[in-house]
Amino acid sequence: MIKKAVIPAAGLGTSFLPATKAQPKEMLPIIDIPTIQYVVQECVDSGIEDILIITGKGKRSIEDHFDRNLELEERIREREDEFWYNELRHIDSMANIHFVRQKEPNGLGDALYQARFHCGNEAFAVLLGDSINDSNIPITQQMIDAYEQYRHTIIAVQQVPDNRVNRYGIVGGRFLSERIMQVSEMVEKPQVGKSPSNWAVAGRYILTPEIFPAIEQVAKTAPQEVQLTDALRLLLPTDGVIAMKIDGQRYDIGTKLDYLKTTVEFALKRKEFAEPFAQFLRERLAQYESSK
Ligand code: G1P
Image (tube, rainbow, N blue to C red; front, side):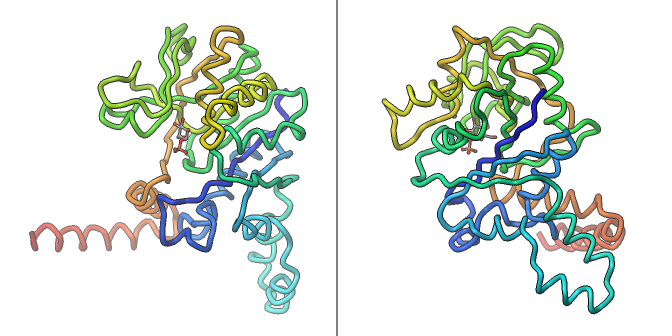
């Protein structure tokens, strides 16, 4: 049974400057919900309520977001706005959230290493904040189900266009079934044309405690840029690593253009915005096309 999740949120957010100069990337909203709240919701929807968020310098607003804000609650109560009062209380009680800080920005592997005491001897889920998902069964739940079956490290993957492999961790191996691959190769951001495949690591993992000594090994040779993919590669010969094709829609929010697309997609999914927003887009696009 997977009971714990780790959400690394310590990155500097350099791909989102200047918005991330003084606020965490994870607090950038898709419409009105900070991206990290979607990620926490995915854990909760997958039955995980014990969540460790790895933060770092300048990330305090993430802690505030999941804490109570008594002054705001009082104001909203005075206005008898029950809807928003309940919403606020939902956010601070949705899960049991802990925080630990990564003291130096030494890469994703090093960030995860900060979770070693929290996770102890149990397998745990890892959710990166650079994607959010929409699927009938939450992606993390799909991963947990795969772990129950295989009892090995599970990595979520999806196919990306050949010219985008250099933006992801890439796995190679042999498909055991339509959605399951036995991984035999892993490489972080390979050059286009030199990739083992176009199956990209999709930001969700089930890891076992064996990952921590592997991270230590990687840190010996690359202390300032400890890649999780490199640590996972060390597990390939001994531990068996399974890649699972995700069943659902993944929204990348790691770059500005992807973020913009995701915002539009989510606006079109929201009942109160869908019609007026679609109307606006139609008119605006017609104008745009005719002015070219
Ligand atoms: C990280 C991982 C990479 C993965 C990607 C997308 O890269 O290192 O393996 O494919 O997330 O989830 P980053 O986007 O942080 O550079």
